[in-house]
Image 1 (cartoon, rainbow, N blue to C red):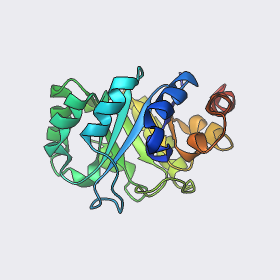
Image 2 (image 1 turned 30 degrees about the vertical axis):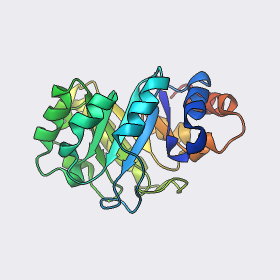
Image 3 (image 1 turned 180 degrees about the vertical axis):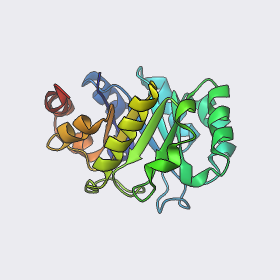
Image 4 (image 1 turned 180 degrees about the horizontal axis):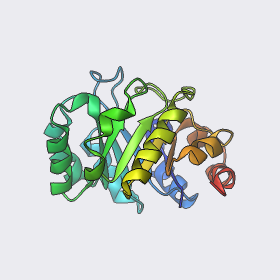
Length: 219
């Protein structure tokens, strides 16, 4: 089943509890949380304290995307805070296998992420070790960007790699996805769709998520 993960990067942080509960009631499958350090990406967002706060009010899994340098230093903190999935960038992990192993040792599902300019071939040696791969379809750091068309081929290539190896892991895609283009993204092979402004900048989250699901039918 295809899943939807609204990104709180686009939520109203002054009403974060209400925003999280609203998208959960509206049918979200995950809560996507973007952690940025101002070094790996040109923005600063949240840390383990906010993840812990969201964990207290959310009943669905927390999908935590670490856009930070040296993520291995902070994995125990995010695990204790309540992350269900921890995604690290291949670009920041010189010892990627060790980092992925550390995530799993903390009873959290490991995921790896590639930026738009990073080829899918960088994932060849790690696919068997993770539960999910996140393909960025925008350059990470800010919400509201347009989908980069080149991401579609990467999704298809990754899907073929997973099929050829008979693996059971999800493909997540993040960046510029709307009800208008989500069907193409899903047909290419995506299992989990991250949507920030496309959900939180609309007046009715339930109707918006229903629109996504309608577009995803048959993928």
